[in-house]
Length: 218
Image (cartoon, rainbow, N blue to C red; front, side):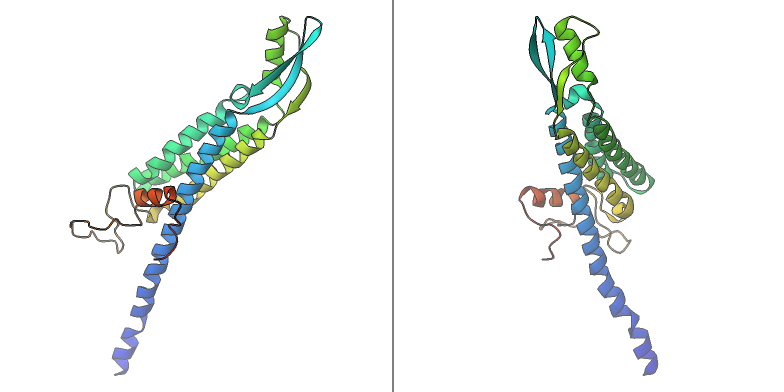
């Protein structure tokens, strides 16, 4: 009697741990998808906005000038596109490939944030525009002001970075897009799917689009 009782103790604990692990994987997956998609969109939006304004002396008067983030530096928007592609590619690969893509996503976010930060007080593009407008290669802009959009781009890059870190930490447990989710490490028998699996990446994307919380336990 004692032998049976001792043998049965660890089984409920193992069974109870499995739903918790699946819930944690779903939450990290949803967080990475949301952070990565929003981060890339924010960087691209901010890069198209005005980052600096100033005046150029033209014909005895002042010509108002402004430059967008893309004119100051095109690196953040380029890295945002790379990061978004890496975010999608994370679910197309497994093993070492997933680690490499997650690292690319992380580096894209870090690079986008860093280069946007460097553009916060950059006036080179505005001075170049002033020189072109005045016809004097040595002319520079005056009354220069900078907007808050570079800081918005930094936040977007930080969200991409967060998505990459989540992928590096939890990505090994995430399902592959279009693949079967092996919960216990063994392949499940192929059968007709009548109800979408809420833990698949494409279903989480759909839930986010509908404004639902995919981390909520049903």
